[in-house]
Amino acid sequence: MNETRGASARWIVGSAKTNLGDVPQVSTALCWADRLGAWKARWGIRRMQYAIEPGLYAVQAPSADSPVLVSANYKMSFDRLRSQLAGIDAWILALDTRGINVWCAAGKGTFGTDEIVIKGDLDGQSSDLADVWQWTSLAFLIFLSGFSALPPQLIRAARILGAGRWQIFWRVQLPLLKPVIVIAVVIRSMEALKIFDQSVLLTFGGPGNSTQTVAFYLWRQVWQFNKFGFGAAASIILLVMFSALIYYGIYLLVRERATLQREGG
Image (cartoon, rainbow, N blue to C red; front, side, top):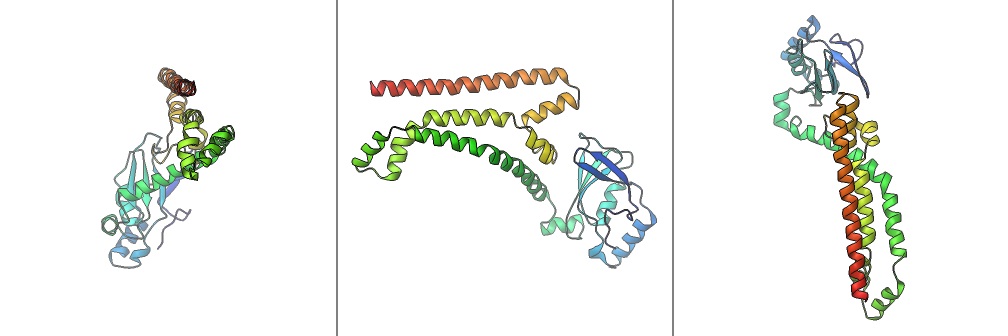
C-alpha cells in the first residue's frame, strides 16, 4: 500500500509548471481508494507502509506567492490536509516522517520547524558554497600579491631581533597587509550584493525566500511582478550603497597610507 507519485496514484490529477520542473498536482477530493486505504491503516493493515513520497505538491494552480503548507508523508495526514483545500491555491510540503502521522512524528522529533529550517539551511549552504568556490581564487591571488609586495628587509630585521613566525605575521606582515585586506573586503562585498546566478540556478530563491539575494529580489519584483518603479528606486538605493562602500574603502586606504607616511617620516 506504499503510495507514490506514479501515474497509478489516483489522487494525482496533473502537474504544475515551475521554473525548477513539474510539481505533482493533487486532488482535494478523496476517492474510494483513499477511504479504503485509511480504513485499512486504522485497523493496522500495513499501517507503517501507508505513506507517499516526500516532496512538494501543488493544489489547484499555486503561484510563487501562494502559501506553503507542511504535512507528514503519512497518507492519512496528507489526505486530511488536502481535503480541506478545495478552491485554494497552495503548495504542500510533505516531510519524511518515516510512515507515521504528524503528532507521533512531532513527538519523535522527525516533524517540526527544526527539520524545515535544516532543509532551508542546506539549500542556503549550497548557494554559499558555490559563491565561495567561485571567488576564493580571486581573494587568494589578492593576498598572494600582497604578501609578495611586502618589503623583505623588515622581515629579516624581525628575525634578527629574535621574533618568531607568528610574531612576524601578527606584528609585521598583517599590519602591512591592511590595504590589501580592505581591497579584498570591498571587492567581495560588492560581488556579494550582486549574487544572482547561483540563487537562480541552484534554488531559485527557495525554499520560500531563504536563499533570495538582493539582485534576485530586484529581478523578481521587476520581471515577475511588473513593479518597474519599485525596481528602479531600489536599484538607485543599491547604487548608493555600492558608492558608499567604495568610498569607505578608499578612505581607509588613504588613511592607512597617511599613517605609514607619518610613521616613516
